[in-house]
Image (cartoon, rainbow over all chains, first blue to last red; front, top):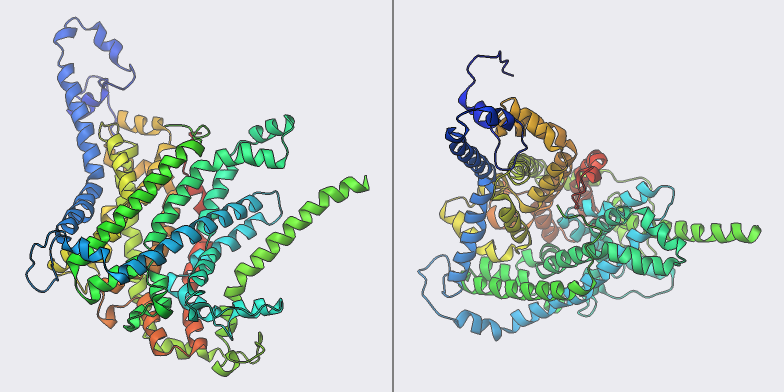
Length: 349
Length: 279
């Protein structure tokens, strides 16, 4: 702290800060008005320096991220677009090959299979997880004792490292000695072969991910707890029953979060990697990921092409195709969402 | 009278029943992991399944930990996770200050850019980023995993920004009138009141680094540099029938995160807000 006595000269910086900027309040301006040579005062220049100083501060603060975005996002994206038109393979020199990587991709049966498997996650896993997490959040939002404990339990699977959960679930899904089929056995249901079956390996992945819906559910729960009780009470007074209150109060209020979780879910499903790679035995150098390649997802294939075969050009083209598919998914979702997402409850800043 | 009580009690009972059952089902795999980790391998492969055995084979833990070079991999994982937390908290709070607390024309468009980069999929940049780091000679070092965390992560910048917006502007204004620079306001005024969001981001970043598999898989090829994620998968492909050891290793790998979660839990939800309601 600098203590100032009247009359002593202030450092120039602090004086400049005291003059009103374009957006600050009128503190200090009365003094200026009293000055006879008001029009000749250097205040316009000082105003500029204040504005400039703010810009410099702003730039200084965001600079790490700007550098990161330029160097680790935009430049790599441009580079990958360039690579996608070459046959670059890390070791040798690269040649421009036009669109042939993209053409190859269209006719690559393994890529098609990987894409099909990935779409399965988008079409089956994402909606199921959304429904389950929404239902769980609604349940947790009821006035029950031990709500915090239930919430903690729900979130706990999120704290299991991805690799550990993949390994745990291989064992849990063991057809003969595993947990899932043991529990199904209590109800006299003969469980499927899960990861050892081409038809059941993807449902197994979905089941494992439903176990981990805590993250999405916590977001919904935060949204639910933000709904004004007055709104719900008003609806109740108006004679709305439970379903109507859900349909016309809760659901509209949650709709931005549903959209958010849907977008995040689709992006995550399209880039599904670690669990499939570990559970499908990708790191063992096996050519098939999961039985009959049924766990070969798009990014797993991209990883193999890029880091096992070193076909950087081809992998880059694949990355861009996947990116475009994701863009289309998200664009469609946003377009459709205009009809059902309500932002009224969300104050604009 | 009796009827109305019944009508009030019955839904409650059903709620508890449903919540109890679901919680039980969520916890079952954890129990399975723990119980499997203290059995002999022969006890694992019995029909019908034996849930409880005595004595507990706690030596599975020492066995498993000696089969993986556990302690060095634990050290590597801790090193990476702590570096990530430091880098993330420093850089993200710094950047968020520029987006939330400095009144300059760039902050709105840059916030838009932040949201866009938040949603940009990492797979497009995965391969070229590897090439860039390889050209820098950074492969087989921790630099490709640590340096980017010091350049900010969009989602965490977003969380910091949302929190900073709720800190009253009058505090900063008073400090500015006293002649404090923005850097000083950031370090001595804004950061100290931001403990909840620092805690939340620390937990999230720690968990993410602890769990990360793809990053170490690509950049760390020497077994001496491996993290537990890599060590565990290597263990899986080598001893895939030793499920008792596998489960013991998984328990030890998971435990630190559970502890971090319970320690950080208190601040966790307070630090995260998606809307910007002031007050």
